[in-house]
Image 1 (tube, helix red, strand yellow):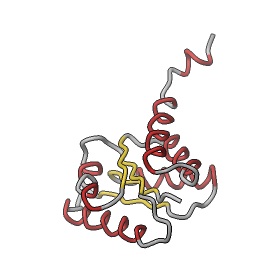
Image 2: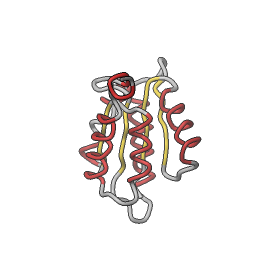
Image 3: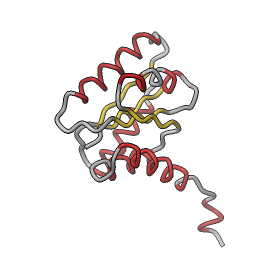
Length: 135
């Protein structure tokens, strides 16, 4: 099973995970990291590195999927150095649909395939509702 870590500014990550638990129940290897305004970049880098390292020690580790709230933001930028020393995939722009896709597919797909599926499902979840449902 591929661990999923959701990283965000403020409480977005916590709330996305809380909503996913309401919809699909409890999940192992699902974690959050919130960046508070008082957080330093170094402390956030250390916390995410510790989380990934802990998952790497689990039997059958095939990589971790990191979902961040914003491309180019602190939540995304602190993850980029992890690519050099850890098996991770990083996807920005997380929404609830993407998180649910990750949880649903992480046991049956390899990390690269899971990353692609989550991105595709996230794109599919963005739509003009009136165009679809209002005629």
